[in-house]
Image (cartoon, rainbow, N blue to C red; front, top):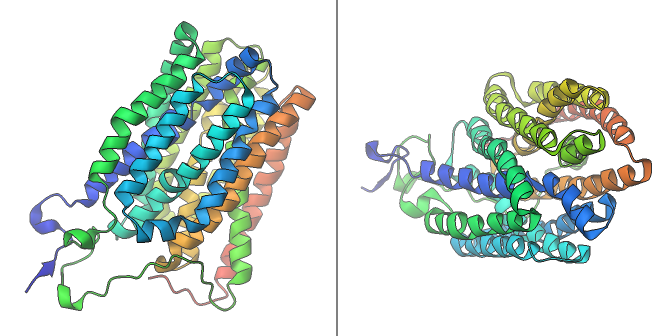
Length: 420
């Protein structure tokens, strides 16, 4: 009788290949392509003679592109070949970065940002939760933390590398190098090795015990949002919490320009991003592991409190560079707050088979924050010529975030939990 084996009969489970695919994906999208965007603000706005607010409007178009596709992403992935979908997305993603090296008008960035937003619906927001939910039965949050930490590991070195290349060859060459890497390394690897579900290969998710094939009842993952009676209020509150958890990201992309306005040299500005990525890397390892031990509620509260300290130190760092460095490092926790804690919170609140569509809806809210928040930071800076108003707003929102954590867990405790 044919059996499915969660351990793949002593061989390395293919789930670890999926894990490698996800690590490279985050290295490329979050680490290589997105984390260094702050380095481009000052040279591009200077070269094009446009305001910071006008250039950071790209985040609005990116968010609009993602919001347009995200509601249908789970359904598209469920019905079509994921290798073709991911391969096509990376081809578009790479092409947009190559094309940005030739742009001369800011509206051209708006178009490519809209396109990258659409592709990010699949390779940025949906890929890890979609694949992890199918391939791993145990230690999801810990492995998610390790996987997303790889983007921080890359960013520590990539930001310094891009900064040096930018000084030597200019920002246009740096856009070109990012696009070439995406096209020649990431796109082929992901397309070749990614698989949708372990059962397509005669396997069970990693960590599941061996079961006779006739007894297996595969989980039917839903592709549309379905709320149980009494869950509408919880859904809305979790959505608002996820949006609040996303706000600290808005400051991260401005760290380099923050240092520039404070009067620090370009290398010191790049060092702020590197320290932010160190905090990002450490946070993803530590937060991902501690979620398994102390729970998502406590870790979210602790992370929000540390981000509060980060914004406070950045207020002091305009005159004292060491404060700015420590603040930037703690500010790096904004990424694990979004990429690790939000998926874990959704896992905590709703059952497994409804996870993908609900998480996608939460991502639309976080996209709205990333788009409008990042752009608003740019316009607010252009108006005030200072990041102080934005940092004060961040402090208030982090206090509100902590309060919302208590509220949503109290609401969850008032209904039956049906996690599968």
